[in-house]
Length: 82
Image (tube, rainbow, N blue to C red; front, side, top):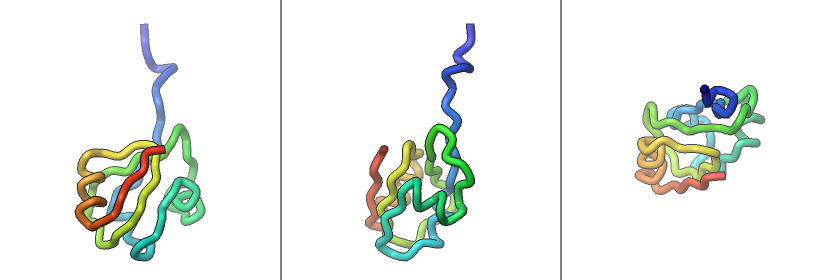
C-alpha cells in the first residue's frame, strides 16, 4: 500500500525571494506566477522561511512553514492560507 497517488506537490518559494516586491504589497499565487518566481503552481504554493524578509507584506499561499510565518509576521506583515 502506498499513499503516493495522493501526494501533494507544491511549488516552493523562500521568504527571501519576496524582497523583490514593494513594501505593503499583497502577494498571491497569481502575483508569484506573473512575476516569474513560480513557473507552475502545481498543487499549490508553499512559502518557506529560508533567508530574511525586509518588507511588510501580506502573503496569500496554500501552505507556510512555521519559520516563514514568523519571518512575515515579525516584519508586521500577515499571512492568509488559501
